Length: 241
Image 1 (cartoon, rainbow, N blue to C red):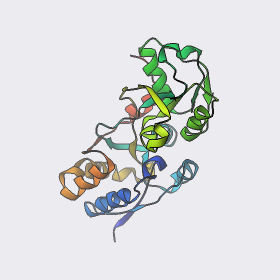
Image 2: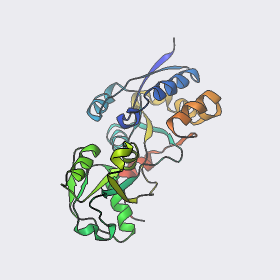
Image 3: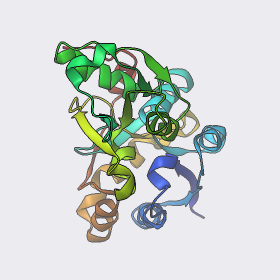
Image 4: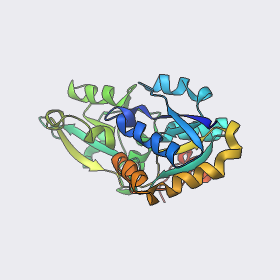
């Protein structure tokens, strides 16, 4: 009987075309001695509530940091060339400028690493952001901007590019980070530590099989590369180099 591995992924990544993740886990099962079962989390509270029951997690930077630092999850891999970045936007009908950002109210999620990345990006240009208007989600940050409760918004770049075209048409893109600093990662529960090298090898070689390569391409990456504990722990200290 195959050993069963239970997996889930960041809700933002499963919000569109969930079937891609079922195909991915089917390929993991096909290329290994494990039976990988995917559990869908519809939102972040549900996702976090599943951590005690999951063996393999594809986690966003904030949850990856928590799982590695506080729960001893083991980093296995990340998507090659995929990093989490920020965009800074304003309303098209109320255009603003980055040059005056120190005088502006900025809707964002202050506790999320994306906001640190945006600040890092601004500091590289000698810019200091003004008041950060904290919001509980990227959707809430966008809503605050659109209803006039903020002059600008810092948003997760993937969230921005996933918006409907008519919504993006209401926005002006003022800046986009290219820090290549934080990333989503595949992490293994410490309870399955004995399987880490085997699972890491399967993930890192998945692209060598045509069906595995197709599953990865559907997720938006050509291959997986190794992720380290040190890289993920460094998310806690984003700083200008």
